[in-house]
Image (tube, rainbow, N blue to C red; front, top):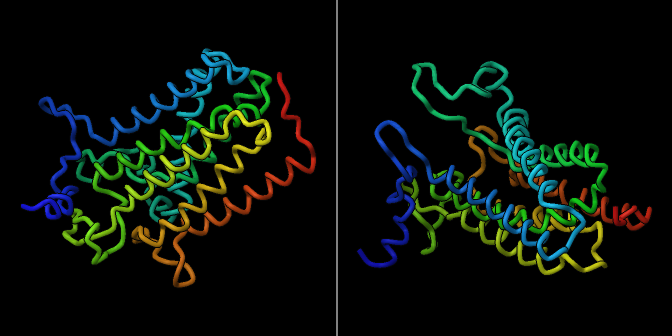
Length: 277
């Protein structure tokens, strides 16, 4: 097989299970999630070591525990309510039950990025109340590291053979489980929403001109990248396209961009208290 053939058939040749010992198995997807959280933790620890913020290691470790729980709950409930509400209305146990009707283990499938954002912000609000911290300072400190973790999350989607793109005839397309040549949209997202966005935010993390603005910058840039990439990603089959052209994720991306602009102007207009604790 030539290189092009190897490249295009790579997804179908990847075993989503990374480790199997008897009946015990660990998926690449799970390992990528662990890599994502470990990367964010190490980046934030680096910031603490360089004294780039007013947080200590124990506080950030505690916050990440809040964030992990908020992410998992928010992402799952976001999928339930935004993407497949009728199914879960009739099968509510499927929200948390990882077995099908025959008793076979299927895992819990279906997470929403935008639901995850709501979950993390909710966790952050609880955290700042507990520690009497400044929300915008926390956002300025944590958000620049998030896209680096997101890179691994989308790489996990690719290794798991899910959330692939639309059918294409381009040579950089790849064959996924349905045997069709498709855009590897997971890799597009890993690059733009992960690596590129990380470089942008990390480069501006200590610039005082952007105090309190890192979160809205992240939301706007993520929404912009996601809106464009969604034209290459296959829409959710149970939803299809809205207005004959847009996916639900594109609608949410537009809303995120509008919200980001509103937050940015609000912070500047009200001169929000982005001050040291």
